[in-house]
Image (cartoon, rainbow, N blue to C red; front, side, top):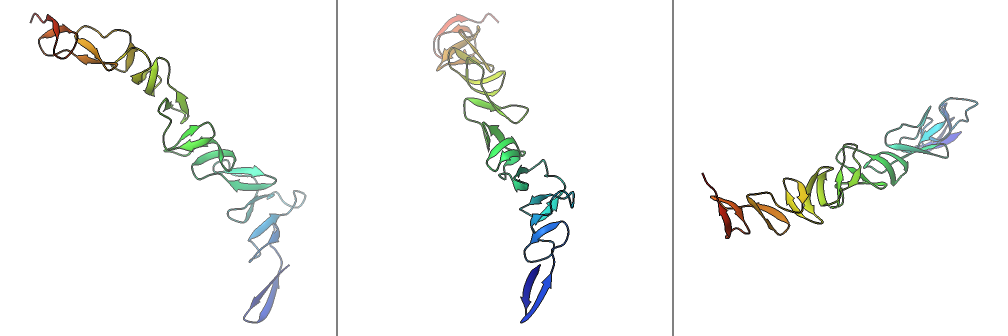
Length: 178
């Protein structure tokens, strides 16, 4: 039973099924009736309504209450313990981040995944942005640069025009024959 004073007049009303306890109105639930009386046994604390099941996206079940996940989580097991992320975020351990750490990439499942050796930084499982060892050439790390390229700061740079082999941008060791 709820009692409200409106303009000096006290109005009493009962909570409406499936609310066991309610706040300012008969349908603003604070708790839900037990399972023996209804199928709506889970309290959505965000909307103050009783539900027959806890929504799978954006909520988790805790002691009969449907509690909201962190706003970046699509699914979670606790408010700040995400198991998957909303669009635009990547799962890093149990948090949803705008981007992955520099030694990881956001895989097709939206999970931060370690770059594969010898990549130091990468944009996918098979495209390096920098190398731990070797030289970067077309997204791959290799010990040597191909003909027509020279190593410069761990990146294979193209030799100058007219040069088929070089050791730097200014030292040509073999000229092109065309």
